[in-house]
Length: 80
Image (cartoon, rainbow, N blue to C red; front, side, top):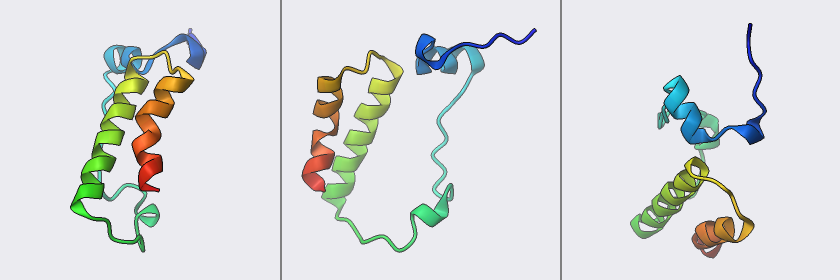
């Protein structure tokens, strides 16, 4: 019998461990979201990569507290 678990009762880390999920960073995935975008500088790319890594880490090790999320995403808002 299949067991249903509510999303609020499991973490991304548990899913990765128990189901052997892994992040795939295929540049061709959802290509239509990436076409016709303005160019960004290397510095901006580095900042975005840091925000992405911090947010991914935050998702893996909850709780997702509002102030923590704000702190992680603030560099992104500065770029915007």
